Structure formats: C-alpha cells, structure tokens
Image (cartoon, rainbow, N blue to C red; front, side):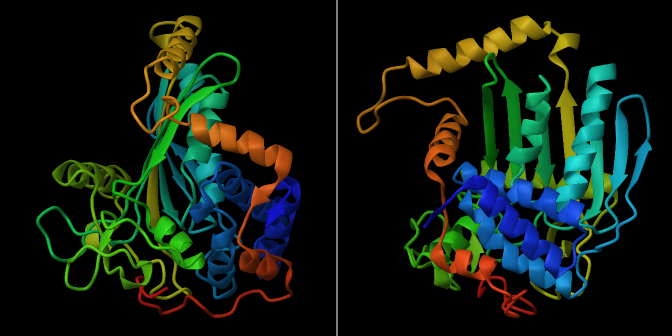
Amino acid sequence: MRIQKEELKEIMKTKLHKAGLIERHAEMVADVLVHADARGIHSHGAMRVEYYAERIAKGGINTKPNFKFEKTGPCTATFDGDNGAGHVAAKLAMDEAIKIAKENGIAAVGVRRISHSGALSYFVQQAASEKLVGISVCQSDPMVVPYGGAEPYYGTNPIAFAAPGNDDKFIQFDMATTVQAWGKILHARSKNEKIPDTWAVDENGEPTTDPFDVKALLPIAGPKGYGLMMMVDILSGILLGLPFGSKVSSMYHDLSEYRNLGQLHIVINPAFFTGLSGFMSGISQTMEDLNNIKPAPGFDKVSYPGQRSAEREKEYQENGIEIVDDVYEYLISDTIHNNAYDQKDPFAV
C-alpha cells in the first residue's frame, strides 16, 4: 500500500513513543526511518519499528539517556550515547561534527555506546545539506563469513558517503560491505521473495536463493569486501574502545540488554581545500558527465550514486511511500510488539 510521508512518520513516532521513547526522540527516530522508506531503503524503514518497540519496551534501549559530548582535540570528539536510541545519538553527534568542520576544516567524531542507528545515508546527508562532505561507518553484529572462512566474524559494517553539488543535489551512497545488507534479506522475507544466489549461504556454506535458509552473508567482492568490513570494525569499534569482531552484541540475543555499538562520523569542509564553489561545481560536473556516458545494453542511462534514490524520493513525495500492508496494520494497531524478536537466532528472524 502507499501512504503519505508525513502520515507514515507520525504513526511510527506514535508507536515508538507508546513503546517508551520520549516524544522528541521518537520523532527523531521516525525521521530517520521515513528518510529510508522515502528513498526506497525499506530494509531500514517502517519494517524495523516493531523490533525497536520490543527492545525499547524490554529495556534494551535507554529511554532516558545522559548524552555526553567531549572535545578531545581541535578536530576530534566523542559522543557517548548512553545506549539511547542510536538514530538520535548519531544525528546529534553529526550536528557536532558539522560545527567542528565548519570551524576547523575537518572533524572526526566517535559515537560510543548506542543501539542500531538505521540508514547511514541520513547522517551523511546532514553534512551534505550544510555544503560539507560526510562519511559515516558503523558496526553491526557478526553475520558475515570472512573471505576463506566458514563461520561469521564481522557484521555487514556499512559505509556511507555524501558530497554536495549545486542546486541542492548530492552524490551519495550507503552500502553494506556485504554483497547485500541483512535488512534486504528481512525485506525479501517480508514479501516472500527469493534472493540472488550471490548474497548469502546456507548452513552448509552453499549459495541459497531462499531468504529463510540464510545462515551467513558474503563479503562484497570477496577479499576486498573483507578488508573494508575489517576497516569499519576498527574505526567504529577498536578505535572507540568498544567490543569488536565476533564480540559485537547480537541484535536479537537479549532485547533487555544494551548493545554498546559504535559509529564514526568524518566531516570535511571543502572550503579549506579547493574552495566551496569550485568543489560543488566539480561534483555537479561529475554528475552530468556520468549521466552522459553511453549506457550499456540493458540500461537506459548511467546514474550517479544516489540519483535513483533521489528520483524515487520525489516520486514517493507525489504518490505516497509504498510499504508492506502487514507493517502498516501493525503501525496503526494498539499492539506495542508481538514478542517476535527476543532470544531469536538472528538468521531465524
């Protein structure tokens, strides 16, 4: 079904507030979630609300966090999220990173002790909207076999990047370091759709097209993705003094426990390098150049990174956001959660 963006945001906010988040935090989380759905990243949108509501209701997300921001140098800082809603902590930490980068040219802000923070594209877009370059990386629970390995060690460990062009357009990407994010597996399950056999493996380590048979994900491009997920784990885990690798907490092991996840924002101010106008013109020229490249057979055009998501967002703004009927029915119901996630095998959810 289709629903208008503001209505979707409001019913998600209401559900999260009823689960226990203060209204301001519920609204901020809903804003990140609706951003994902509006750009077609449904794996990080409304379908996640029931999981968050269950974790909130069971005490696994701190509903009264004591956020602490600490400058550790001219361009560096940490933000302690006190295991509050990860979306809120990550957004507020990016706000601080933007301030530092505007003043000093570059910022690196580590976000400590948070819960799942959703689509990283939201946070790098915060920076790009302020005419800055944004980079964000974060940990996730171990679900990926390392290259050459037969059991999971790292998470999907995503990387996001955004850079501003002219006319409020951005080059932007948000990618898992696996062939596909776990949320996309969940989305396939919610729609009873098959997945490509390059995404994941079953209990025997064999490629599978059945999302319900998945027992581990595969790194993108083999050893290259393996290296990237290692880098993300170091920058958002070891660098911040947090659990890392297979020690990162599971999303579903115990929803009454805090997760203590880490995230790192890096923000660069182009004005301290080549100059803002020249930089933005260069980004716009890159967009134009990519669009003008002769498309390969089977493609109608070459899109720059983030272009299709921006076009989808515009289409959804006009015609409403498409979400699964069952998700909508849950959101408008009186049910806080159905006890569907706690103590589950992550690959069984």
